[in-house]
Length: 384
Image 1: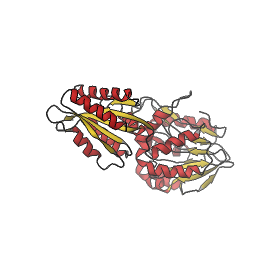
Image 2: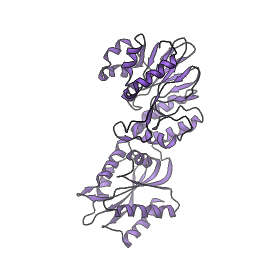
Image 3: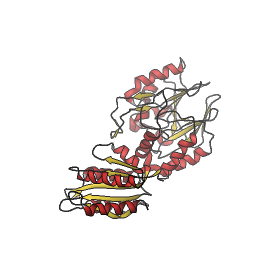
Image 4: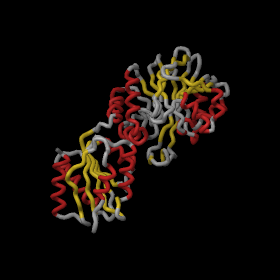
C-alpha cells in the first residue's frame, strides 16, 4: 500500500482471526496498520497485535533498510495496536516512545512498566520534528479509549487517525468496498462515543488533510469529504438512509413469516427494507443496519415469559451504542400469553428521541386476517 516515498506502510493482515474483540465475526479478517516515517530522524507509528509481531517486525526492518528508528509514536494502547510494543522496544533499545499522558499511565497495566523510562508524554498541539516532517499531536480521548491521540504530519498533510476511519476486513491491493465494513466497524467499536468523535472532527476541520492513515483498513486519499461526511452522520446519530430494518427472532418459523410479510408490504409501498434473522445473521451487521435506517421493527415471540434471548441481546447492543433518533415498531408472538412487545418497549423506554409506533402486531401462534389488518395499519404508520 503506497503512501509516499517517505511514509511507508508496514502493517499486516490477519486472516486467521475469527472474532474481533472476542465477539465480532470478521469473516474477511482484519488489518493492523502501522507506518514508518523516514527523514533525518525516523519514527514508527503504532505496532500490531501480538499474533502478528514477527511479520510486522520484518516489515519494519525492510522499511528502515538498515536504519535505527529514533521514535515510536503510540496512538492507541489497545492490544490490537500495542501488542508488539515490547518486541519493538527490545529490538531497538535506543528508540524513544511518544504517547499521551493517559497512555503513559496505562503502560504498567499491559506489562510495559519498564517503557515508562523511555517515554515522553505529549499534550495537545505538541510537535515532534523529524527533519522536513513534523508531527503535531492532537488528543482524541474516548475515540474510543481515553488515552487515544491522533497525529498530523504537516509537510505531506497526513492524518494518522488511530481507530477513526477504520474498517473491518483485511486490506486488499485492489479497490475495495469501504462503506459497509466501515459502518459496521464504527457503530460496533466506536459508536457509543459520538460526542468525542464530533469533537475530533471539529479539530480535524481546521487541518488541511490530504491523506488519512487509520489503524485498520485502507489508507484514504481520494474524496476525503465523503468519508468525513459519513463520520459526521454516524457520530451525530443521524439516520444514514430512509428505510426500515426488520430484525426478528423465531422459534418455529411463524414470527419469521410475519417479518417477511411486513417486508413485502413495505417494499410494495416503495420502502427500502432489510430483514435480519438475529439467530443466524451477524449481530454486528444487524446493529450497523439499525443505525443505517431511520426505522426499526422488532419481531419476536415470548419465550419463558420473557423476550426471545437473541432479541434481548440485540436490544442490549443497541442500548450500549446509544441508539437514538429513530422510529420503532413491534411484532410479537405468543400462543397463550404474548408479552414480548410490552417487554421490548420497556427495555427501550427513555431512549433519546426514539418514537414508538402506536400499532403493535400481536400474533397468537400463526398469522390471521386480523394480523394482516394490523400490518396494513403499521405500514401506514411507519411511512408517515
